[in-house]
Length: 314
Image 1 (tube, rainbow, N blue to C red):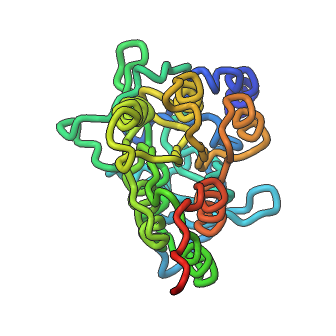
Image 2: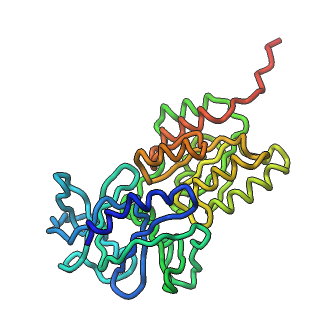
Image 3: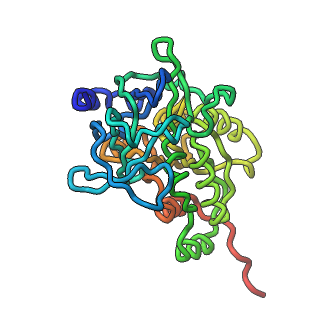
C-alpha cells in the first residue's frame, strides 16, 4: 500500500508553488481523518519491530532500523490523545523527514492522497478540541480533515530553545541594522515562538503573522504607514493555510509597494525541489528549519546596515 501511495508523490509535486498541497491521509483510532504534507513522507511501512528505550519521553514508542539507520519512532496516536499504537501489530509507520532529521510516526490506518487548495485550509476553532497539535482544517469529500502540526509534536519531545551561539550574538551585536524589525510568518505556534526568541537575541523586533494571507494584508498596511513601523525583511514558512510561502512570495514580488522586500523562506521541508522553487518565486534565501546561526547569518546579510554613522569626535 505504501509503495502505491508514494509512487504518486512525483505527480503531486507539481502542485507546489500554486497554493495547493498534496496531503497523505490517515486515521489514529476512529473515523477522524488526519493529514500530513506528502513532501515530508519518505516511505510508509507496516509497523516494524521496535526497540524499547527506557527513560525516554512517553510519546517515543521506541526505535527501529530503517534502511541501515536507527530512527526514533513517535506514537502519533498517543500525541493526539488516542490509545497508543506501540503494541498494535496492524499499525503503520510513516517515515518522515523534518528539519534535516528523520523519524517515524505510528498511525492506525493509512488512507489516500488528496489535493487541497490553500484557501480552504484554515486555522481550527478551539471548539473542535484538537488543541495546538493541529494547525489547519479543511473538508475532503464532506469529511473534516485535520492537518497535524508535526513541529509541535516534535518540540514537545525535544524542547531545546532556539539559542544563538555566542559568536553569532557578538556578530549580530556589532551590526548596525536599519531597521531592526522583521516579519515572521508561520502557522505553527512553536515555530513562531522560536523565531521571536531568536530575533530577540539579535535585538530585532518582530511583526508576527499566522499565515500568508494575514502577512500580505499586514505588509500592505505597513507599506502606507509610518516608515518607522515598516519592515525590510520577511521570514516565512512555506506550508501554511490560506496562502502558502511560495504564493506569499509571488504576491510580494507582484506588489509595487512590496517588491523590494527581502524574503527568507524557512521550512522543515527540504531538498532540491525547494531550492528550485525559491528561485522560481524570486525569494532571496531558503533556510531549512531549525538552524539558528544559519538563519541569523542570512538575516544579517540581507538586512541593510544603518545609514547613520557616528559623529566625529571634537
